[in-house]
Length: 262
Image: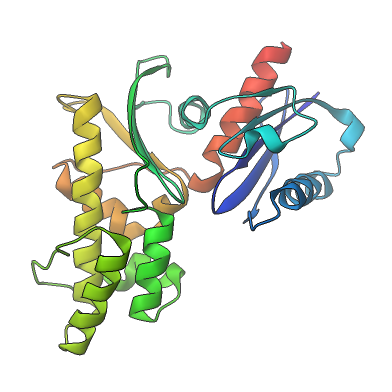
């Protein structure tokens, strides 16, 4: 028996295929693009080809994310909050606070010991501190977005960007570069600004995080600089990240498909 989860976000379209033991057989992450129907078809084909499983052998499909209702063959559609909670519980069981930073929004989710969602807070009014924000900052710094995670190494200043609005922050970065500020100092300032915004979200769902496991999912969790800055901002030793943080939503959807089928 095989179960498929598909997460259609603003930046990426992700899919995870699992078996009845909840083992991940294959996964795929591609850009969503403007034609999300085509992206859904392609990401599904990717996981089937990688696993050698036939389309007819899939017992259930659950979709999640902004485009979840675009998956025509779905057996159900579930919110990304529920799916990320389910996915992180499977990968990092001790998680009690989950930070999910995606392409265009940020979420802080409080979980009970069994991994059920107790409360959540979301920043979806603007792209500040999200994947799209970091894409804009990478362009301003003239580096590949994959380089941002290590760009702050060796930074020593206390620089923090004064604005988290993508447009104003991009202008501020350009001005800092023109004034001779080093890239690593600007990157560190960016990370601190994102961390401060993230910490305020966490405070809305948990008055205290003492003794609680904190994890991070979503594509931004691949950015080591941001993850480290979030831990420092919250005054904790570590923010845990799964090996593939950008497939957590799709994994949770696949697990829900398995549970509903059972």
